Length: 234
Image 1: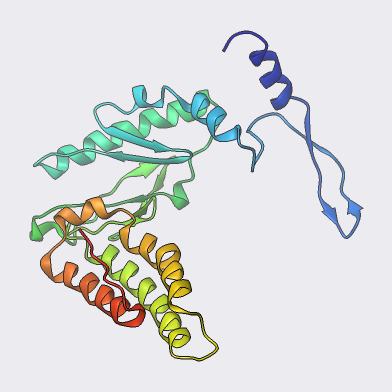
Image 2: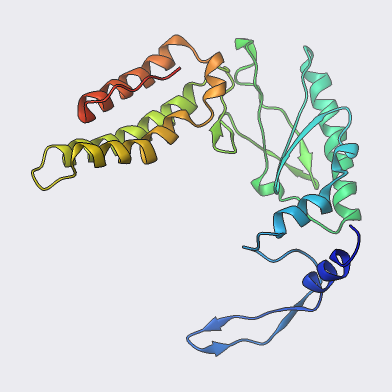
């Protein structure tokens, strides 16, 4: 960061006070010495710069970062090796947290196992973060995508299909009333409310089973009948 940007950012982050306004009654001021302001367009970028370099601490595991959502993973045929690798990575990432004066919330963190070996479907890996055992989640959700241990997109498709059906019921109700929306408006509602739900994360549908894909197909057929449009999912 060069020029006037660095002192400007320094002034932006320093000398900040917090207070609570409740029915025109103000609390005492509280000085903050770390963190970035919430709901500020610059905050995500500054936070990303702040935690850059964390990937050096997680070897031999892999890491994915999106804002303050962090995911660690590793792959191996031997589950004991995977647990050992992730355990080392979690210990190392704690060192990063201490050095940067941040805390990873162990109570909101989970551990999952994705495998095609049905003998391991009920296996619960035991990993610790900040000396706290991580909860096991059979169907973890990351960035809006629900993963499943069977790796067939079953749980994710089930959720989005259920959400789309609820909206479909509203569309059917509106389309069957004289005072309801016309066809063009219903089509806009479908495009803005239903279609994003069905198409979000469609890339993972490549591993979806035929049975689960048929669940989506039934929802799309219902939409086509309600709106008299043809919706194709490719």
